[in-house]
Amino acid sequence: MESQRFDLTGKTALITGAGRGIGLAIARALAEHGADVILVARSADQLQIAAREIEAGIGRHAWTLAFDLSKTNGVEHLFSDAVEAAGGVDILVNCAGTTVRKPTEDLSLEDFRRVMDVNLTSALVLSQAFCRHCRSAGKPGGIINIGSLACHAARPTIAPYTCSKMGLLGLTKTLAVEWAPYGINVNAIGPGYIATELTVPLRKDPEFDRWVLAKTPLGRWGTPEDLVGVAILLASKAGDFITGQIFYVDGGWTALI
Image (cartoon, rainbow, N blue to C red; front, side):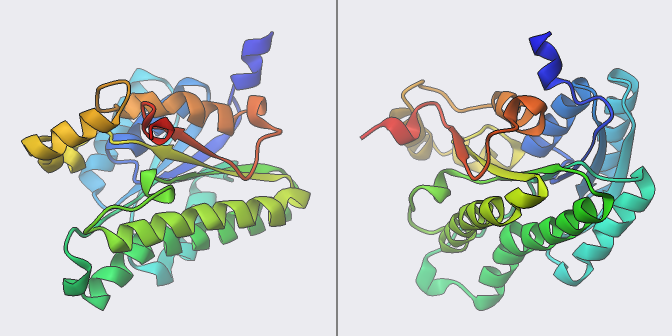
């Protein structure tokens, strides 16, 4: 049956930023399609709540690893802990992200480096560890990087975020062509403006909210659940011939002049 091409039974996925928002929605969806999940985020409390929800409500195993991805020196060890706990990783979703909003002329190097470390460097180091793991195990794998509209274009006051996300798209394409011989597919999802806890201040700003709605042909903010269909496609056999791509899930934003 064609639906079996979306079945993830027997797979294990590691998802960063999985305590809430987009990361948690993707983790739930992967579990609903049969995958066991390893949840990574800074907050142990958020992770425990998410894991209980997935195990009790969906019936898949959920491991939790609380870790601050700005501590890049420990990221490879984090991946080793994940493999030890679950026995292996088949799918990597780099979703953790942060930002700093201020005029670029007032930006500190510390702020810039922290955003780059969380959004880009951690994805690189986790992807490297994932590649070595897949090659050692002699198995294929899939990486999904969560990008942004900032992979496509810039706006004022978010220079570190934009640099990190444009870099993440470059990393996606580079790894896709470099690791294709190993059977590792690497793709990205570019969310539009999504209603999460992190975007509450933006949604509460009437001027910014009007700007988002005017720029989005579908006329609304997205939800984390709007992203899960593409994530399942890219994680499953249905996406076996897709690599090096970014899929904008943006309500038509990038299609509008």
